[in-house]
Length: 362
Image 1 (cartoon, rainbow, N blue to C red):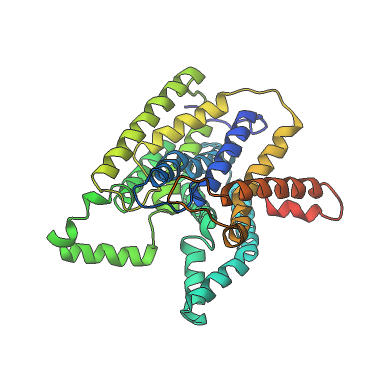
Image 2 (cartoon, one colour):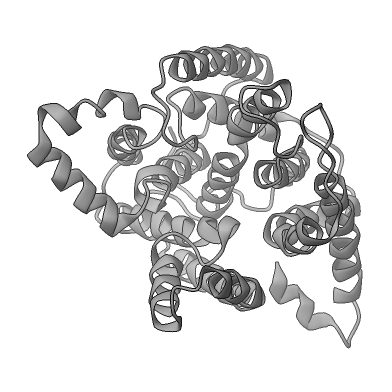
């Protein structure tokens, strides 16, 4: 690993832009079941499970790795520039605040339907905004910001990148126990009730291990170490690594599902190498420069951030088919189509003088 100088941050990663667009679509599918709400263990139920809780789970970690890579490409280990990190964190905080405000009417309507009281909902919203995200997909922002700040702090203390990845891996392993590998600690409820009560109190405070410490930390750190490396795997080796890891992740998910281990589905052991190899494939694909990739880059961000606005409308207005037989959920194609069209309109309007401020949305 060459840590002696700043990496070239001007390199175009057009293949990465296409992969990010693909992952943005996967994020939409995670939040909108492709086959609606079918009966438990029906064909539609199984299809939803494997599409949403296995295949699509590569998406958010991929964005974390990409963010870490592109950010830390602007600096290096031996010439670590904290000002780059500060500027990035401020930008992410602004984006998070803007989208929190945009989604506030949806959140207010949801809380109003809960009928648990204004004060309770206000406190809960503030708590979630800080810890788990102000709206469903917006958890990405506080997780990313926390992970970036933590990695920057460790780098500023001259902790080696390899050590940072190892520390992050330990936290990820702990986080797995509250997620897909929950079956390992479930017996503690009966065998060690005191320890179980401590774990429940910790969970009450942090709410979930799908956060900056237990999940984003590792994937952003992987992006960081790839950015700092002077060498990386060839496209062929990365493809082989991806295929083998993806198959192993399928076997892991199947084992966990069949043995009733799974509590939540954000994290798997083999998700880590799967996403890492997939990312290396993305940056190794060399495509000729074109203005279209700049649009693709913006489009992937806008799809990620805005799709649940349209899902909120369509899920409440579109007629739902009878899911006792296999049917495509109409909310999914409607949301995807309108999100893409509106995002392209926003991108186009950004180039005008009157709507230049739209750039703050992505």
